[in-house]
Image (cartoon, rainbow, N blue to C red; front, side, top):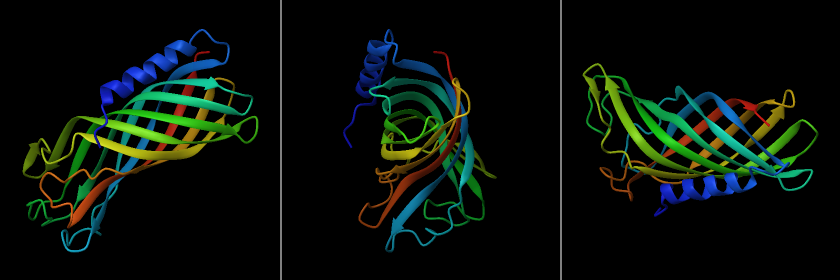
Length: 207
């Protein structure tokens, strides 16, 4: 998708800064666990599509939250987020007899709308834009850049958020990538490779 991550970042920062002086605005820090994998949709392009394994990693960043009403709010974030997957032996990318992993380091910008079900529990849904900062393909053969990975990723996100205290909350989120990440070397008519992410976060509000 032809989406400029720089423009998206500017828009999010302008929105958050414009709300900064409002009593309905909160901001803070967040971080936590990522569990990610590639979803492979393939009729004949990848015989190993069922053998890619999930990989645990991390994320951290800043967020801003603006209360539109007593129950509805919008939340924007700017995160450093590590995704990726573990791959099998003899996969389609040309490796043989070496298990390894691919780590994808993203600048991630989620923009979410939330609804408070109770005074402590909320649901959120929205979109996430990602720009690849760097990548690593790590195996017994060594470490190299995963040059076959696309540099942009777009997905939809949804989850729940629980306020432990007025300043601390815990959230769980699922991000469903919509952009194939390996079309550089694989015919998209034969196979698509899309990010899937489960994210657990702990956040602290300053205001």
